[in-house]
Length: 280
Image (cartoon, rainbow, N blue to C red; front, side, top):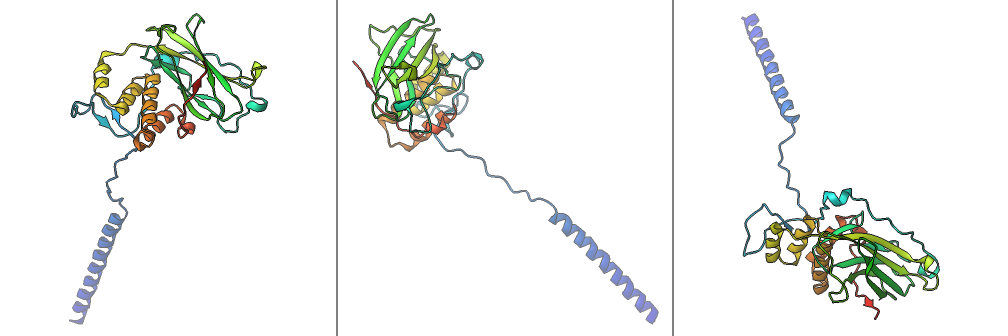
């Protein structure tokens, strides 16, 4: 009887050990798994983006989506050879105290598009002792069609140079490219120390598929539409005008930063937009 009882006890102990081992293995298997924790959707701050294939218009306005405006340069412009840049020299009193030098607000290859017959061009002007600058626009043959002398004493920030719409200046023609040149005159007696930047702009026709949403859009939405359709000059000038009219608008400031960062100009995105005086 004692033998039978001992056998039963031993058998029970073996079963318990097997059961414990099985449970531990199951537990270890569960512990080794990576829990399925749903990840949070990635969000991005900034202004609206136009989505031509998105939701229907609300209150007669184009739909928007999150994220600031981002410029998309047309492949044709990306493949185009950028204009030859003039030699840039810095001497004496024209030396900049800023870490960032004279910078045109354009895509990296300095090629832009516009749908305007009289566009506006923007430049970052560092603080220097220079008193004057000049802007020159030439047609494809190299003929000068516009020149503006500018007073820049004690100025620093982003400036805009507009082509005036008057009978003395012909409008930009559709399908044609123009060369611009902006020069800070360091010494009017020795122009070899000038600081210059050059680039080109092409006037293109406003396509029908974006004309309608543009008519219903506010300034922020227009900026997005222009930017995503490769029309740099008008995206920038539209947003600049909105910022000047509403200097304390945080959303417009965020849009401005997003737009400039999309063309690698984030380093000057927080610089002020300043008025510049044209010489008579």
